[in-house]
Length: 464
Image 1 (tube, rainbow, N blue to C red):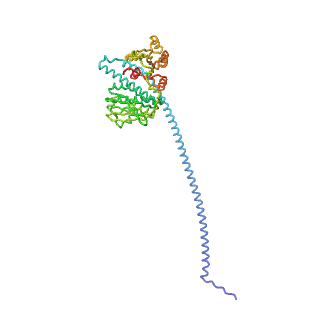
Image 2 (image 1 turned 120 degrees about the vertical axis):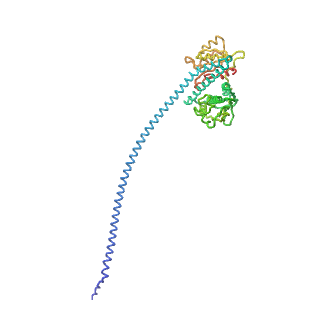
Image 3 (image 1 turned 90 degrees about the horizontal axis):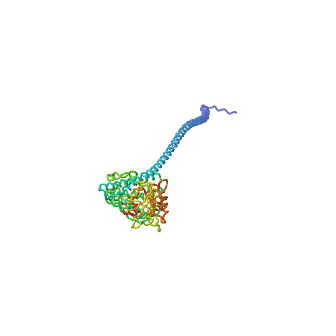
């Protein structure tokens, strides 16, 4: 007998659709989630592409801006480079023009120096030849003042020439070993006369030390220091002395002058600087001497010193390296042969193409007790010497003679007529240091024009 089917109850009938619905709902949710994931991925994909598009568009815009900025910067750099090239060209042209102007200034000063020093030399010689014995005191004072004024003019010309040579770079150092005594002995008589005229005393303390430097440039330094000390010392005196130190010889110039305030001790070495001091304002000078000292000291690598007490005096010094003593080298003498015997006056012959210079030399040498022969050429002097059977004790000749003849040629012409060549000196206002070295190397003493009469007296061994 077949079993009877069980009649479903209400609960059983309702449970089947609910489960199915749940399953369908779960499947639907799964489908929705899948669709949503796909939609989101699609959106994300589209969004990324858009972002890339936006980024690319922004980048392109940035590149355009940067390219434009770069082009503007390049244009600016080109303009600046062009401007810099124009400035450099202008600076180069200005430098060349300045160098040409400097060279022209140096040539002008050299030519002007010769043209000015020739009449100045004659004026100094004429003044020196004036006998003061018969003059009233007022006239003697005027003669003394005239000598000082002309001496100041001569110093000023020398200073301007030194500055011109330094500015043009024309000065070259020639280092040699020499005894400092030879330089001090040459400067002493010259500045003692100047000190006496200023009413003060100059003492030069001897030294046996040897130094190594350029003797002519060191002489320029000491000349400036000594003349400066005399100029600003109204009472007391000036002392030139050397102090031996381990690192070199300290050449000192002491004075009892007006002194300098500490605030000005470095500034005084600047060109044209003048200490604002009433006592100094009364003295002549243009403020170039100490600047020349500083520049030459730097050129020679010499250390310079200065100490001063206002109202008490000053010390200026330079330290010079020691030189190697030459055992066989004799101290330089002005005369290459003995002077004239005491029973007769020395005979000096003078060759110069300037008539005033010959007259002035004849007057001065005659006043000093010398016999004098003058002429404008070596040949004319020889005629006088041979006709009178005379032998000169000293030959003096200007360097630049007429018709392009040089003084050394005239001297050699005269010396060749004697078995023992008389000593000779050449007078010149030519500032060329190489010329002086060449002449000295050939055995000539070189005398600056205007002549340093104290130096000439020392050569002739005439009492100062």
